[in-house]
Amino acid sequence: MPATFTPTLTADLYPAATARILYADTDQMGIVYHASFFRYLELARINLLRSAGVSYTEFERAGLGLPLIEVGVRFASPGLYDDLITIHAGLSRITRVRVSVQYRVMVEAGDRDGTTEPVEILTAETRHCCVALADTKPARIPEIAYERLAKHRSAATPGG
Amino acid sequence: MPATFTPTLTADLYPAATARILYADTDQMGIVYHASFFRYLELARINLLRSAGVSYTEFERAGLGLPLIEVGVRFASPGLYDDLITIHAGLSRITRVRVSVQYRVMVEAGDRDGTTEPVEILTAETRHCCVALADTKPARIPEIAYERLAKHRSAATPGG
Amino acid sequence: MPATFTPTLTADLYPAATARILYADTDQMGIVYHASFFRYLELARINLLRSAGVSYTEFERAGLGLPLIEVGVRFASPGLYDDLITIHAGLSRITRVRVSVQYRVMVEAGDRDGTTEPVEILTAETRHCCVALADTKPARIPEIAYERLAKHRSAATPGG
Amino acid sequence: MPATFTPTLTADLYPAATARILYADTDQMGIVYHASFFRYLELARINLLRSAGVSYTEFERAGLGLPLIEVGVRFASPGLYDDLITIHAGLSRITRVRVSVQYRVMVEAGDRDGTTEPVEILTAETRHCCVALADTKPARIPEIAYERLAKHRSAATPGG
Image 1 (tube, rainbow over the protein chains, first blue to last red):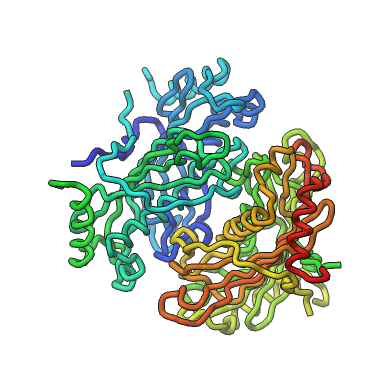
Image 2: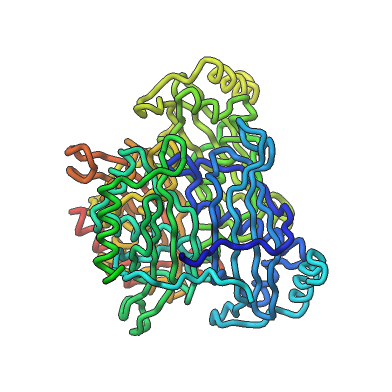
């Protein structure tokens, strides 16, 4: 049996972004090409950070970045052209240098033409390391940002 | 401790494709945006199938597809603009309905301006399910393709 | 003197879509990579058609497509990460088989961190031909869609 | 009659790059999504500069960039999955601050499964302005690069 990359969702997830699937996202199988979803995950991640009080732009102004160092995605069912997708996201882990985010992409009930059922498209987790932009070496997350992220996470997870 | 998505490379990998990193692949951190690598993985995967005697185009003509259903990637170090990357790939698992492929993206010695050392960029695994294009439901891999893939894999893996 | 591709805006443009520039859209020059804008133009175009009463999904169900056959873009100033862009769009020409759309991408006053001035990012025009999906040959736009598009255009253009 | 963006090819074009169309490039119309071609144009452009003795990486090290400021594309016929495309490119205009490149994307005879005829996919022109990376303001092309580009162009164009 192979190990699984399937992310087990442990974080409390919030609807962090919605988007309409474009023709640009599809492939000739008539479904969304797998790699098209990564920009939607980014959109949700940035909104999630913002809602925790952390602006990625300010992060960069402080000379820091949060590149993705690991990702796992399990596709549950195909995304389709013109789907209105909702990307749910939550912080699953915060350390002094790392941030992990979990995602669940859904077509909510009524948001796909021709069905009234909600549809799960994928679940995913991305792991990020704080780095200095100058040399791409690991760096500590600024105290204020760390506290806001930790607070946002524990608000979601009683006892977390 | 969180579970890891890090793919443990178990397949014998071959250099399946080379490519020059474009400006289109970079982001403002000055490195390759993570999602840019997926098309290079596709390029290697298609070449790998071809070298096993399986043409994806013929696969489609038979009314079948091989959509990606799971993916795990671990980024070891940043890809850079103008890097000449080599994508090593190998079949890690073949069943009657599924195919798994493992990858290692390298900048081989001499292929990055300014260094003579080889650099590992990432390791990854993608898992695919054979489906009927008509309804995106799981379908058996055609016997001839299955045999070729299994043979290619066991040639790589004595006793495999 | 070379001919110019610069589209001269002749259509009345409406704000058809807004979007937040992602990291995925940037390149290592620290600006938006030129090709990243095409999906935003698509987003605006689809919204524009929808507001004229023409659903692209229904168009496809009727066995028709509207592939892009010509495009001209003039970039006025760089788009930046985290810009909130507004894509203004309007129908510039409708015939029985062709549709042309013009665009102006703006960062409206207050929508870029660090400035209060509006910024023009680009102007563009795309030309599309109605085709039968079966053979990608030119086909007539269905009467009802033609009328709605023509009406939408003449509402915008007195005497048009 | 609307003005045309159709680039009239005036430059001598050379085969500057070849590439295999990926699934990532296609859309659900079963053809190559228009925006997918821009990375292939970049690939050809960089190779063309390189063959003229101008490395874009060195250009950047000198603090300069060549962002695209205008583009026109005419699509002649659809690109298809698995097509082996050849991107022909040539310098059409060099000034002290600007560079224009013309392109013709072809599927050469024998390079598309199912036909032996060559197929023209598109013609295009991109116009670039030399800028200082520090402030994105126009800057002079370095003398040595200018001379090499001008020489490459006049070698192609007797009397040019």
